[in-house]
Length: 116
Image (cartoon, rainbow, N blue to C red; front, side, top):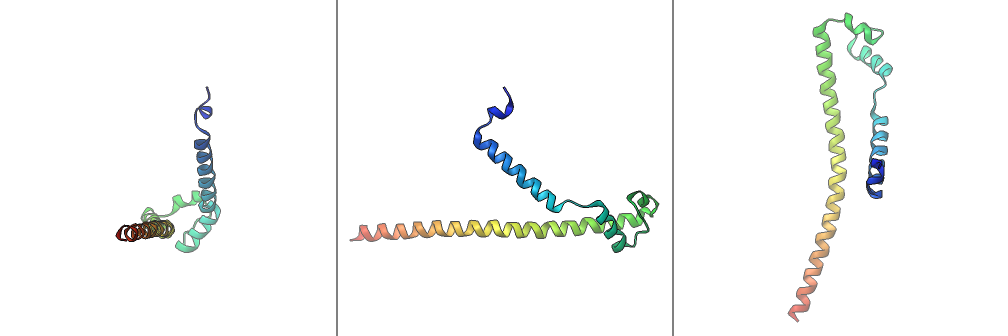
């Protein structure tokens, strides 16, 4: 029996939705190699016209460039993660506030009924 028929309808739908969402997210953040090379040449004054030309650059300088790129990527990832986390926490906070308010109102209502 094929593996897809063993999974429930809901599981297949969730997996397909996650795959589409992740694929769409990847399409928005993937790196265009040609554009990246142009940006590298401009930002770090690299005397190369292709990625093969990187082999002619001094190794120590390439280490500095790589460290700088990794640092800036980590900063961007943390900013993006913080922004995403903000929206999740804000949404959760609103649901939690509504839940606790409803419980508070219900508890006050039951106290008012029991005290009379």
